Length: 308
Image (cartoon, rainbow, N blue to C red; front, side, top):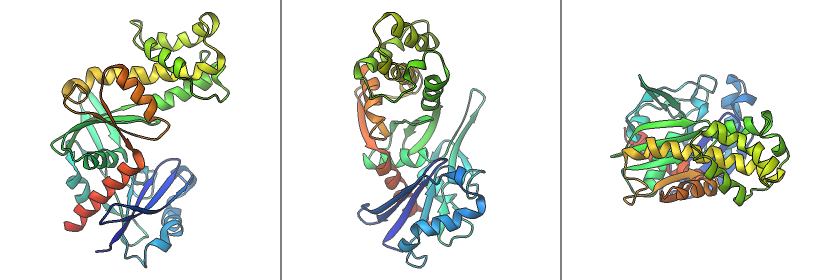
C-alpha cells in the first residue's frame, strides 16, 4: 500500500486536490482551480485530473479518491447514492473506478427517500464522517454551511438523516434579484450589527418572508444603511435556517444542549456567521475546517477500501 494518497473534492464550480501522508494525515501539498464540472466535458475529466496531480501519482502507485459532484450524472462517472442510514464502511464498499485513470476511485453520495422527506447529498457525507473522526466521536449533529447547506444527524458511526437548505443560493437571489436586496448590489464588508439585527428579525412571528422584506423597510425608516443591507439579509436567512434545524434536527439529539457540540464544518468566511447564529440560540459549537474534514473523511474511507 502506498504511504500517500490523493484526496480530491471536485464540485460544480471548483477543483481541490490534496496530497496526504497516510500515517499522519498531514497535507503535503495542495492544488486548487476553478475547473468545476461546468467547465469540462466527460471525456476531459481523466486528462485534467492527470494534468493536475500526475506528478504526485508515482506512476499510478498513489491512489486517488474523488468526492463531490464529480460522481454525479453530469460529472466524470456516476457513482451511486446510497440510502441512509449509511456508514463510512458502506461508502468504501461502493466506490466506483474512475474511467480512464488507473487506481482512481469515485466516492458514492447519499440519498434519503421517505414519504415526507426526499433529499440528496454528494461530498458533504465525506466531510461529516471526517468531522466525526476528527473529534473521535460516534454521534453528533453536523452543520455544513454552503450554497446548499447540509445538516446531518450521525448516530453510532452512521449517518441517519440529513437536510439540505438553500441558504446560500437564496441569499444570492434575494441580494441581486429582489427589491429588498437592491441596496446590497455592491460589495460591502460584513457588518456584525446588521447581521445581529437579521438574526432577531428571523424570529418574527410573521416568518422569514416578512423578515426579508424588513431589509427594505429598515433601510427606508430604521437607519439600516445601504452597506448593511446585505449583512442584515444574511442574518435573516442563516437565522431562519438555524431556527428550523433547532426544531427539527436538534430535537432528535442532545447535541447542542449540554451533552455535545454541533460540529460546524465550513470555511473561514461562513463558520463565524453560523457560530454567531447558533450561539444566539444557546447551541454549543465546535468549529472544524471543511478542507481538514474532507481529508480526514477520504483518508478514513481509503483505509477501509484497502482492507476490503
